[in-house]
Image (tube, rainbow over all chains, first blue to last red; front, side):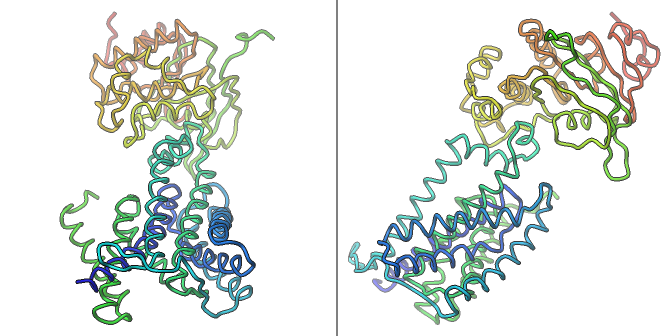
Length: 283
Length: 227
């Protein structure tokens, strides 16, 4: 039983990082209609940036915070390139994000080389209800939940957040209000960058990252986002947790090499179940 | 030059194309301050394209648009943000201006004050149209363009909304451009009108005169107009 709880705790922690990546996918997709294939790159860059800052002597907390801020700026830059001129079709932007993801491999290898990196997270164990778990797990879950609540407040309560929501609800109406949908798209990319970066700085102490770790991170994040139809952040968040727990159980009880495949099969099964409950779509 | 001596909106020889199709072909329209002007015509005549071009959503291929003030549009189909509350919808209407106080809209439509916390998507069509008009008013426009006020609404709701627009025009001097398929309504509440057909202005003049035009009667008023 205690083994099960330990796997559960590990799964919730990694699932929380998938949830952050998934939320990034959702925020960008809702506002711009673009599936950002470079979403996993933000996590990789977040991990590498925090690694470098920590090695340069920057204190924990500040290093991770700076890394997240830089990934937000990188997200903005990616948005500028991907969204291009006003009126660029989302499909064209999607292909550009794929190109940016591949380009980032060259950048990461040039700066940091092709070896995996990691760094110490919160060290030590914490006993909760007789189950001992890494403090880093608790940090990840707390950071993910706090971020999610902050995003809910931002989108639901602030004027800027409401404008972003308006863009995702009805772009034509938003433009009639005078809201610059293109600029809002850039802001969404910056938020997506920050969310990916945060996932990266939290995940790197648990799983070393290398230049191409973005694929695994993005696949998990995308699967979680799809769980919420790419538009519902709360469902995407739940999807991330389900995926993380499923992977931890598979890795714990069977074999770690099967974890992604089986977890994605679980996700596919859940989506089929969801679709069968909804019935056929009208279109 | 004194304010008011120039038209608020002047459109001259406007041409708009969607690919090879010409949506507007040499349209001339003007709206003076404090005036209520109707633009009537059948589906696909170019009414919404005209509004979208003035609003900057569609680019003109040729011609000139001069707008000496702020424009707000009540779009066809209302296009509220359904998952947001009535109040948040209204506040977003003030994106271009600093003043986000919603009380003036609640004074105009007291019923909306009761619905302020309701999701816009849960309201009746008439209530949604009130929110759409209120949201446009939040932009403090000099010219309010209303695209298909009556579409899908019960006659008594349309009458109520039309009375509100007339009242607004009389009290605040806000100019109104009413784009309508319902020519009877448009000619009743506006002093002047344009009839647009296949992207061109087919007729223009005082509503009174257009009401008596045999072409307008046959095409838009279902035969003879009754006082």
